[in-house]
Image 1 (cartoon, rainbow, N blue to C red):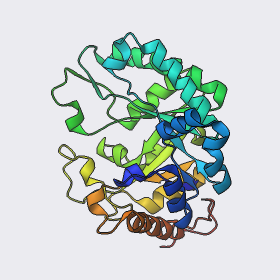
Image 2 (cartoon, rainbow, N blue to C red):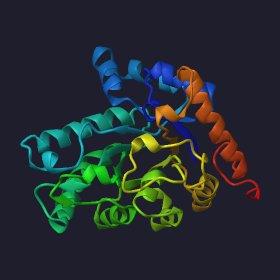
Image 3 (cartoon, rainbow, N blue to C red):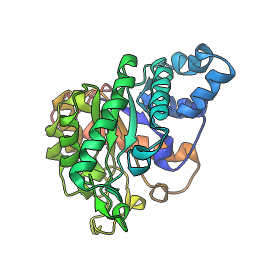
Length: 299
C-alpha cells in the first residue's frame, strides 16, 4: 500500500510536472494520471516524451478516470462502441506508465430501468470495458455514490451501497474488474470498515480515505463534508490502514478532502497538511514506508 496523490481530490489542480514535484516533496509514492494531459503530450510529441517525467521521477501511477459514467446516457447512446474503443486506447497510453486502473462512476439511479434490469445492463457494459482494458494490464475500478441527493428526482434507485457494488463485481466474469473502496462513501451508504473484507485485495483498484463530521446527517450529507482522515474518528483511519495491511493490499491509498476543510495557504501548503496527517496515521498504524505492518498498533 502506498500514499497516492490526486490533487483534484483536494480541490486544486496542476500539470503532471507540478503534481510530481508536490508528491515527491511530501512523501507520496504515487499519483493519479490526468489522461487528457498525457494524451495531449503524446499527440504533440510521442509516448517516450510524454512519459519521461513520470519515469525519471520513479513514481507509481495509481489510476486515471474514464471520460464518461455508467448510466442511462452511456448505455443508450449510439457512440457506445466508439466510447469502449476510446477506453481501450486510453488504457494503452496509461499502460505505458504502468498505470494500475481506469476508474468509472456508476450512476446511482436510472430514469429508464428498474434495479434488476439496470444491474444486468451494467454488468454487460462493464464486461465490454474490462475486455478492452485487459490486454493492457489495466484494471477497471468501479465507484459507487451513496449520497442521497444524487438520487433525487430520479425514477428508480440503483447501486448506492458497497454491498451492492461488491455483488456486481462478483457477477462480472472478467477478472480485471474491481472496486474503489471509498471509505467515506461506504460509511454514508450505511456500511463500516468490516466490509473491506468482502473482496480479496486484488479486487480493490484504489482506497479513498476521508472522515466526516460527528453530527453529520447521512440523508443530507454531501461531498463538501469530507474531512481530513482521522479528524473526528467517525471513520477509524488507523484501523482501516491496519486492516488493509493485514489483507495484503498493495495498491494506492488516496486522501480526498473538501478544499474548505484544508485551511489557508497555497497548493503546496494544502498538500503538506494532508501529507502530514497521513504520516501521523501511518505511524499510529505501525506501517513501514511501503505500507506494511512492522509494529503493533499503538493504544
